[in-house]
Image 1 (cartoon, rainbow, N blue to C red):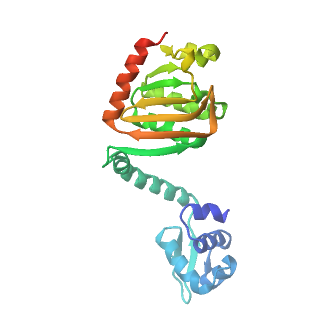
Image 2 (cartoon, rainbow, N blue to C red):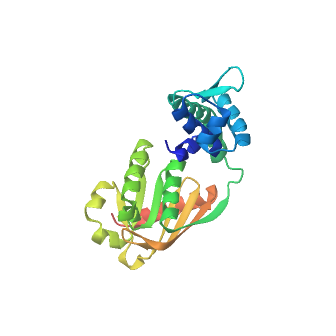
Length: 246
């Protein structure tokens, strides 16, 4: 049995060694356990007592030195389930604390592909429709294929709607992808750029370093959170939507 796995389940290194040793010994005193586990006898006493408290070994009372035996390894599964139950009890409160912001105005930067994934996670977390200005199908970067598939399923589950005003380049190169995106419009060809703006909830995200279906390695995402600002951008989006061609 891997000692690393036992430690990942919450056992200390000495506890893992002693439990692992007892699986072979079946029943033994502290001296024999200490020798088999290669743990100093003085440290073995504390580790054995903790294993008893965790229900992974039990003492056999006898004349002279006490002896110990391990319980069925299935007990380890119980420990995992108990931790899961305990975590599920506190998760709602933890989520509430995470999602509740004391400050309703924020500004920060995401960078690179992982930063782009964080932005996509924010879209799902906020759970409101998204408005795109200057979009370039960056979500279809081949490095995001698996992530995007999972994202799409969750977005569909939450019934999110995406409203796209694409760069003109997308009209020329979008092909089959555009057929599955519902209603969208295009900026005139003279207004192509490597930047874009996305608005969802009270977030405004501006991008630099975008290409058609590609997220540049040095892409920067400037994230602003302000309800009034986001509403202003949504108003401008409506104006642009009416001015742009289908």
